[in-house]
Length: 420
Image (cartoon, rainbow, N blue to C red):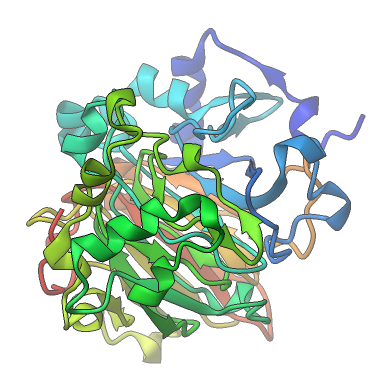
């Protein structure tokens, strides 16, 4: 068996704390992570995750194709018939592995930072690549109050469209957001009434925006959105709740069960309750793009030094900064040290180099169980001390995306406040 596979590593549940502490001492606060693949039974893979085409259905055809890769995740995927560790990232330490969830539980503040640990007792966010061949149903994610009714947490999220993973736009690179100003609740209710008649027509009440690689969106809970077919980097809250409001997508049925998956059973047929889940003012906002569209903003004027760090996700949801993200580009032959104020998950999307002297490479093709050198978790102490990046290529930039937890980047740009 190859030593370059996840399955060749021994799974450990004891001595995790001592292994983590020793690893962090050696790496300057870094934990290497193995790829975390997630299938979706109701979607079609977009084939831009660099996953080998023979492995797109590695979980089995009945589980659906793999169209997501989750980063630094301690959040289980809410899939039917899921594997016990589905959605959980594994830390790779020598010849052993254990979940990041276990590492955080054992080491707490020394990994995620004292403020996050004191408030949440976990790593409360995650990010992923979402990669679909076509659009997905018009749906929303419940608020914290709504999700609590079914023992879950709400899910604000954000989008960034990395150019490195969007050489093709696939079938429909446009996303519907919200509802047209002037739309009534009665019109949305009628769409739910017509669920079993075919296309329930909810997209007739919405507006599509053309997606632009190198830009993004901030999407609070309770806002309808039908993501288009660009491969998307999605920093978000650590939850997998949703409700689909569209009955037919590209000729494929969306079952009613996906509308009410995270709704108390007594409301599964209550159309008024389902309509009232939506944040109405936010959905019919005539200035929706102004309030949610994200364009990259440079952290500082460092281009002359051979690197550029940019904010790609910023803004607040209901007055809270729940997550942020940056994109670091290091030019060929450049070495730089980057200091941050909080822990983060990192994925390398282009080039080859080192991170604190460890190999950092963006692979061209990945087998399902193969280990990579493109993903790390950086502790708060490591981030504050500074992480050194070096581009070893003579021709190609080294590009990394990293996302952060709640309230750790007070210097992040402002976006018009979004409601939860």
